Image (cartoon, rainbow, N blue to C red):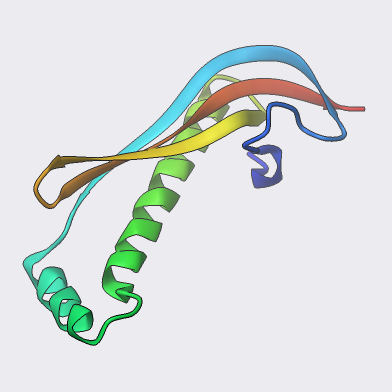
Length: 109
């Protein structure tokens, strides 16, 4: 799927929606490792960006995003509108990241 055909908006500029395929999602669940927590603990002593957690979060979002794209393609869509992320802590140290949106078929205007 062309990543430029994914938007948080409810229309895709330059395209006409020809079919609403349905809701798509990608879900990933991540935990922090003991070593990651120790490294992040050292980073918190100095303040600023905690790069170990930032990298973990970015990887989780990217995985959820790719799973959502795969789901949209499986449903025959070539675009996703209204794309959003959601995250929740499932238990201490375990977080789910969900990417979701509406899969559509579009044609260039």
